[in-house]
Image (cartoon, rainbow, N blue to C red; front, side, top):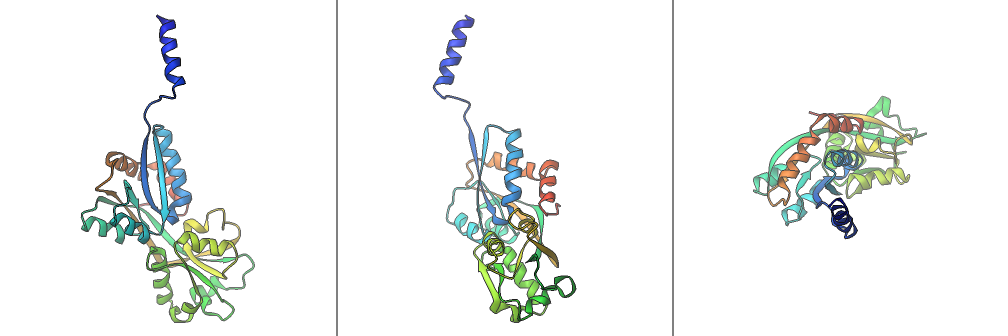
Length: 249
């Protein structure tokens, strides 16, 4: 009997038949990529039968895709506006704030820009020729950058210098490649390996960004999406988010 059971188990394994795996599809703001990779791995250690598959982009671009039926289970936005609009349209539910991001102004090592003394006003200097920001039409951190420049009284002076990335990830890439003199970015990306140690970043006062999530009505794995969202708000994921520069509610 033992021999028979062993042969059945061996035959089962040889056919490649294993426990069915489940995929959780997450549409996530580009600023989350470094942190979410760690959070997803931590979740999969608890749920080894689940594959967390993330699609990254500007929150506004992801919102437009979701409005048009993109088949995701969960939306992790870089603001509260886009999730709220999905809820109002009857396309999502369970909106919850999962992180508080911080806008920073980043300059490369050796830059003469006097951020520490002058703050954003330093970006108006003629020596500063190009400043990277995410496109404010689709990226919440781009809107935050625009508002911060306006509040500092330098929006008109800096506007001609702006180089728009279609997401904060592209704005960060401009900074990493030396294509710009400064960048307004989420702190999470200023701490990422591509920029950490290659420049200095100064938090922009009053430019904190609340980031929320929603479960999509058409989600194929709604229960799993809620489980992941609960994990995201738990102690292990909160510690990961904090390590990547976020405050947690």
